[in-house]
Image (cartoon, rainbow, N blue to C red; front, side):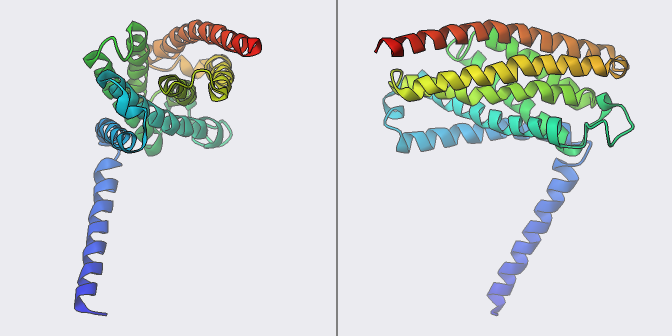
Length: 278
């Protein structure tokens, strides 16, 4: 093996060691996770925005004929879709598969449990909420009205408290599972923008939104409050602010979810009625 190849391998190993040291001692170091994860989340939103613009501009015939504000919304929905897929997967893992919040394997209180990975996920999510709120304010009201500001503000405050205090991370992840409906909502907007409102894909998408919303934003919230009821003696030991968030934020979001669900039901009925007429 030539000396040049050995030098290259040595350089790669040195770079890998430095990168590993940076991740372990700073990005994933307990004192730094809340800050580095939030900043990383904001940075990744910018990366995804630029990637959406680059890919769509090169491969989408619809994108190139959109107005400037429509392109911004197109890319912004790309960010929310990526975040939703990521945080939904993380939430499902921690709530249903991980042992971190299991009553079977731990003797300490579930409301005070956290880990590096759970904190990292919450920090990245906060970064998204900050970035998206910034986009909404920047182009207000084109990217969303007061209901979006209220939703993101409540979610951001609750997630931030859970991250920095280490309290109630299980319930935070339970609520974040509701983000699983976001890709379907965004796909509906993309289909509408692409002029496919009368297609079968649009109808199927509406049915999927109805089912996903019913499970993730209605039934799951009922399950969350039932879990709080079963562990109320632990919830009472949280800080008063955290205690208020456990009840206040899901209740407020639950009301908003019911209002939006009513609109979804009416929309599905209207779409199916038009299909039957045809």
